[in-house]
Length: 103
Image (cartoon, rainbow, N blue to C red):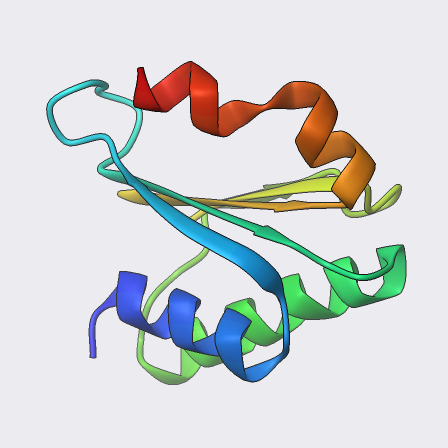
């Protein structure tokens, strides 16, 4: 199972909602994919990141960095070619990352 599949499956299994994968392969040198998801609470956002990190490590993948974990409203996990964004619903609506990268 690849990195992207592990991340999406973990988010689905742990009841994140509005999960979206944005293909960046021809749009950016930052990463190949953004994965966006929304949690029901700050505690769930933090737990989602922990579950993703744990499941990636079990399969031999490294997490390069995690930002925003302390506040938990928008957590960014850099997994190399995949960058994961876990939002609170307010933050996701405010920053509207989908429209920025999908246009």
